[in-house]
Image (cartoon, rainbow, N blue to C red; front, side):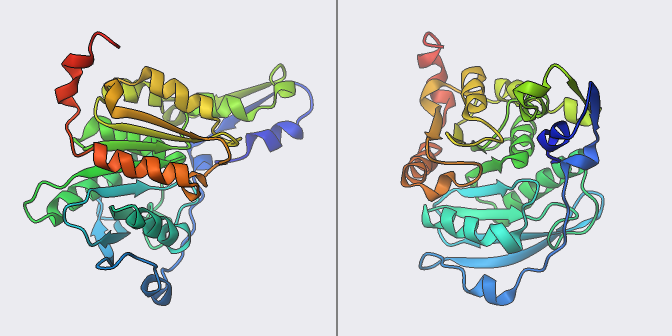
Length: 293
């Protein structure tokens, strides 16, 4: 998304900025290199497959499926506004596979190898289509699917968790709402002079409302040095969550910034523990914990 702080720094007097939905996206096409795909450092027995599927409107989308453990959960990863499989995706998929997960990720429409033009509702619909594809590829089994959204992708992940049944939700470097995120981008010295008008489609993106609707396993990952999405927003989401206490976690990594939490051993260990947690249904714990919440 556009850097509001830079606009504020150059503003003079009282100003109002309008943030359109188009400002939220930074689409860029890129090809996935065969050599890079083959060179992925995957655990023994794992394979990485290119996947192509059609969105509900016929748009062709590119995805990657890393698999090798039929008993492990599949992490459906949704990246940030600059995410492309060909760039960040291969490293992230290899890192998650090393934690024992199967991984599915896609290029958003207009990004990487996917066709079309991005929109908020388009990306939401594409994520639902990808989730349906994952269920289909399970060949009649009942796969454990954990949806992991990073930054912009956390809004898509949280919304999907309210629309479809999933076995776990991970929100990394997330925000309580786009409104809160936008207001945070304005430096303290600019707040008396600057107002931000958000497009209606952005104003409606509210993760607090979403976690209040979702009661399954929840993991929040935040960086103590994250200047874009400060850790306090993850704490607020944890407090608002409808998930029972024994099924929700906050990993706040003090040394981490925006997007590098999983390079830290403490975050990887917490992530691994959360994967194991999703094997036990949360619903069975709700009654026992109802007096605590």
